Length: 215
Image 1 (tube, rainbow, N blue to C red):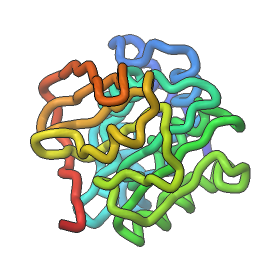
Image 2 (image 1 turned 45 degrees about the vertical axis):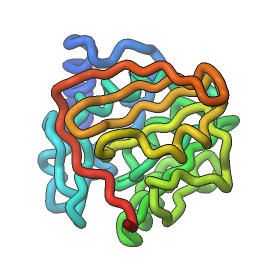
Image 3 (image 1 turned 180 degrees about the vertical axis):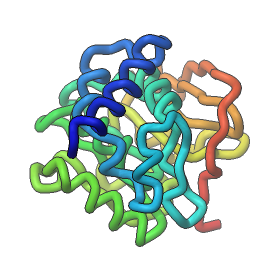
């Protein structure tokens, strides 16, 4: 990767810091190390550092950097966390989270489109996350979560549910855990404070691809 491109990516990350979207040192470090261009389809590589969503095929996108920064900051991933990533897509968010949770953490990326599952595996493998066992990408209906690896410290989604968060995500979350996910045009943060008790916050004014289920 040439210096020009590194400089462009550094400018993008610095703009996210300056505008207040990136705040936490560990998250900033992950953004600096996990280059968005490595997750962008060849056709759109020249736009990898534009602060906009880009198509990855099958009606899905690699999300806008601003939005990714915002939702990961809301999620607050920590070293050692086990996180369920719904809609792995290109694998960029999966890899950012893997960088943050480190070798003692685990990211389960769920993807329902076989070709995108393979894309996420290829892209996250560039950073040895599959080899280290920090990332596992599974082919499944993300609306049902992934109970084989439950319970999770956190759940994140890049695709918008309609009406409410799928109940399975809440069931598969540890008490004290957190979900950050879009519902229609809002980002919702849900904290699990008891076995069936939840606290909810909502942030308005976003746009996401819809969460696709098998039903």
